[in-house]
Image 1: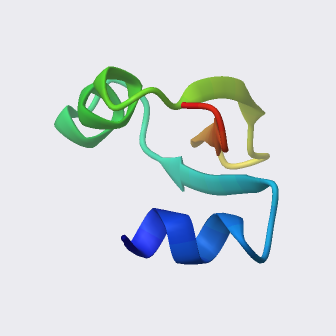
Image 2: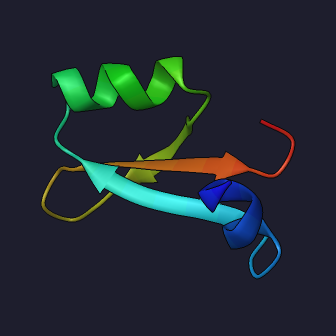
Image 3: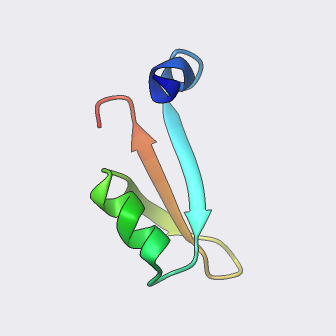
Length: 51
């Protein structure tokens, strides 16, 4: 429900997390795709409407 509300307002949900963490594995399993890294080395993950 929260994601439906969010995607009414934006096409992509973007977040960052540390590399090789349980959080990264959780988000990848949930359908997030890696789109890059931050200058500090965190992984940038995005989830689109269709996921």
